[in-house]
Image (cartoon, rainbow, N blue to C red):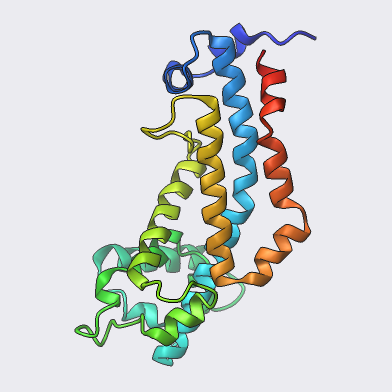
Length: 239
């Protein structure tokens, strides 16, 4: 059955379609629709490494900080920022509503804290000895959470990367075009941008857990990503 691109484009928002037309240099709705689905196909392969980065970061920071402060509920006293306190209270409320057959334990709250909370735990006040009651990131904590990070990499540099991953995560989960940037004006460049995101995710996962990194390779996740990026495949579909 022939694909009716006119009907499909009518079902997409004008703004979304225009993003693909102006951002990638297309003039026809048909090519913009094709580009949309092709880039979505690539983007789906970023979910699993992203989820592993998020889970690993959360669990690693929690375990390291629990050990540092010898307190499984350190998040009740350590997060001094209003937004962090709000995040903890929201997570605790969700846990209380969802768990009715037993008391809520710290792990229930931790599992409901969003990536943004863990990103905020890398903010400057948690990196400075001038705030000893908040000081998390000594050399031991860094090496525990990021055992494979290149020598000399500062916590500030790591925090900057994690914050960028969080921005990428929010765009991906809200179905925004994660390939979009000021330097992207063609399908080739959009694909390269997605490859950059892919490389950052895998490198960051390697910093934290070589075992999880190896598992993704063993299951063929990177291979499927790069197969989806095959430019010849796009050329056949687009033209």
